[in-house]
Image 1 (tube, rainbow, N blue to C red):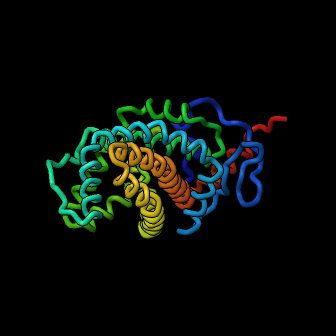
Image 2 (tube, helix red, strand yellow):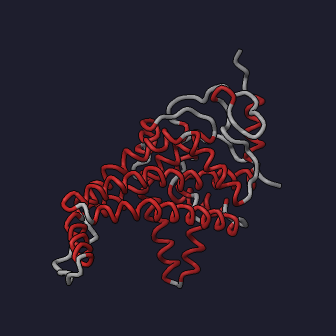
Image 3 (cartoon, rainbow, N blue to C red):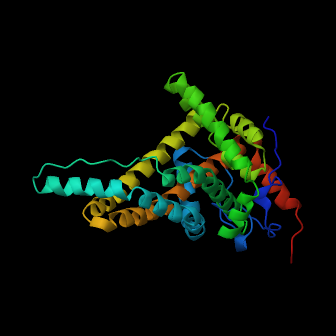
Length: 305
């Protein structure tokens, strides 16, 4: 028999005040008057998980895009500026080839720029803030980008701590051939969501992800593959024209590349995190009867006239 876990654990997820009073959810999901889960709490198939994430994203795209833009825009512009010489060199080579001239090779610019390092450091915080926002809206709770980031900053050391632990475990798995690394990546996939939703420590978040994905590896992997394929297809279709335009734009090519990259990422990254959030709640519904626990709590809550 599935164990019933506390549906609404205390933690950064709950920062910002009490939840609004809730009433019965309408058929098919949604929250009456802004209260209650925004989607129906029920087990979902691989495609249904992605569909639910798309619906969650579509209803809350302004919140999610604004939350992402806080970090994505400055980091992307800084990274593009740091690599401006490389972009210029590639553009010169591209234009020379168009004219039938022999490309002139010069001193390259290291791709491992300060902007790239900053992006790597910012990614765990961006994921945590988006997970906080998406999980709050999944449960029908009001939240703003500012509140999502304040909740994230309260876990300032836990977030990079979890990121480092996951990275080391996955790298160790990859060291022993590819399969163990992929296996560990899927088993630890929802740890960042558990960290912010449950207020767990890095080690506890890893343990929670391991338990939730136990017996659900193939389903979780299927959802992950589907979301990555969708992301890559959209990324190539949107980013390729932007990259080609930046090559022929001359000195401002790096700026166009930074702006274009920012637009792509502030739209795409929230979707990726939203899918992971839906996976997390779907696993809790399957493994812990999360839907029954939420329903019981809502029935027991006093109704406000």
